[in-house]
Image (tube, rainbow, N blue to C red):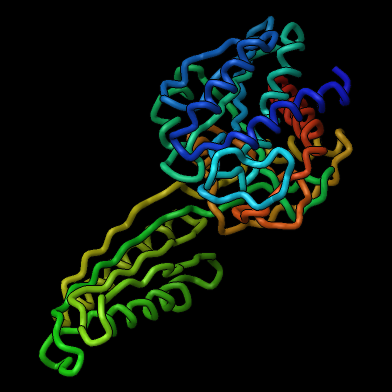
Length: 380
């Protein structure tokens, strides 16, 4: 298949996917579309993922060998699209603002390329179209299906669009790539009273405000400056009127870390902050809602990606660890994996209503991932 033929093939799928975005765990139309394409792709066998949305398939080589998986996420975001694209979202209030349509189309391209080369493949390629990356713990749900054990997957690869990198560029590095993503919620209960007589109640607002400040001291004074961590309070809610001191206040936010030990330490310190307020007479409920762990690239597989990118004439840059999360990490908890960014240009960041990717990057991304997989199948 020539590059021009591949690009035409990919554009058809990319445009359809962009026009039909669906939210996490509601990707029913997307799932049907992907499965129908895979059924019609030479050399590809559709498998049962075991979830209502998402798809799984394999390309089994002529000879036995390793099992390598490639993952793409398929869900979109609850954003009204303002990109002005001729193939703009047709689902009001929902758009592919993070490039998952690109990821899915690129993996369909990998299926097309490797399916045609099935007779030359030694081993098995697993194609994973994952639901719910943006929300609802899609990576964890896939892990819980047991497919990694069932199909004896040994290595896993994935890519993500990067708007601030030009087409023809990838960013890769061994080790930490994206942070662990956790959520927290504090409910601080005092006793409401009249705003003119605060001494007759127990005001939760100043207590919660002090809690916001003390949380920042965890990072600045309790965590080693050689470690990286972020605690962000993103919601502070309390009260119903200007002259009523409320009975409770709520704080909600996120914690981002790379080191599992630091992650565990922060949980304990945040709980201790709650206990401190309780000694003052407040009732404090602290909820820790763990998300995906940190994405941590295998050194050998990262080098494999880098070398293949150079072979495919990509410009390779070093990926610095970032505090955004990526549930590809759930698979790296099971097997070695490598995740990288592919440059797709654009003037707006991910999760913006005007976000776009340059589809000119599609064919290169599919060919690169196909070559990575072939090399991973033959690597010792």
